[in-house]
Image (cartoon, rainbow, N blue to C red; front, side, top):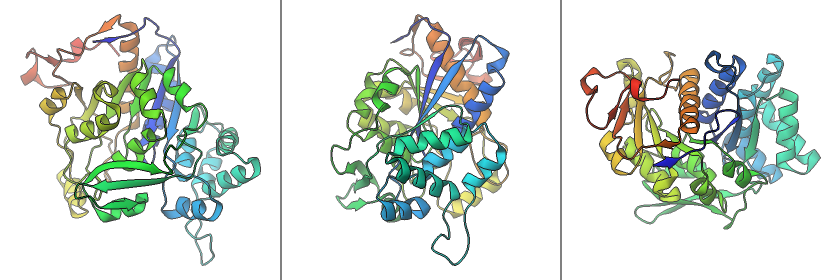
Amino acid sequence: MIRASSKTEDMNIVGIGGGTGLPVLLRGLKQLRDRSVDGNASDSFSVTALVCVSDNGGSSGSLRQALDIPAVGDLRNCLVALAEGNPALRDIFQYRLRGESGLDGHCLGNLIVSALCARSGNLQQAVHLAAEILQSQGRVLPSTEVSATLCAESENGAIERGETQITARRMKIRRVWLEPPNTPPAPGVLETLASADAIVLGPGSLYTSVIANLLPTGVADAVRNSPALKILVCNLMTQAGETDGYSASDHVRAVQQYLGREGVHICLLNSTPISEDLEAKYARAGTMPVCGDLEEISLRGVVPICLDLLGGGADGVRHDPGKLARWIVGLTRAFLRARDLRFGDVRCFVESDAANAGAEGVWTPSDLPAL
């Protein structure tokens, strides 16, 4: 059982991740807030992104090495996802320079945030200034202001340092950590988690984006002890070099390794089949759809909720921002309005499965509080 307050307004939603996954959720939440959630003006919510800064590849990695600052690329993507201002500014922040100079491959937004960091002497202040430029509708926080290195140990004891090196090694990961040890969280991170109404883990790279955010000192404890509803958004596809062969319950298991069983209440999974053409395309790159092993998820004390979360693009497999955000807000609203939200007897939730309707331990849409 999860005991919740009766508060229904001013929901605080915190997304944890990085890369290209977390911005999908942020874009959807911004769209919902822009049009007044589901037409219900009484709903209001704030959005905070807790963003991984340990990337050591590409433009971010080059700037880390040159300027001794944390990686800024994922921060840039989240700022742009929440941007409200001139669309031209969003395009400028995402513009990637080309040519024969040393600037080839750098995103202009990375250079701007790095310059603001050098000018202010503080990464969080730099992000705040960039948010003002873009008129971002929400907060973006780095998980730490230390230029830390993500490290991983494989199941056979091999150790690799650096995000790029970890994925290139294609190792079966046993554990990850940050160096230097006892890396502190950025100011405000622990307080943000403590006051959250919902903490959303993912979507995004399991170890190098989601779990990496939990590694600064005190962050995992803050998530575990937060009274928030904790939702893991399961990735649609495995990731070559990081989660090869992982099922949905493997994703849950990996997160619980750092948060414990109370660190995840719900696992959101996509129920819509991926086209054969796209599946074949991804298979050639060494990835496959994540298997939704619902019973195994339930055995870990987590409620699997299967929904249509798939985006409609023909060029890639992605979560639909609007669908994902709508369910995150709906679940958070239900959690806050319920005196006691009982998950212990629920095996899974299936959005549209007539065969399971009425089955013991299976929720159907009528069981879930209205969106």
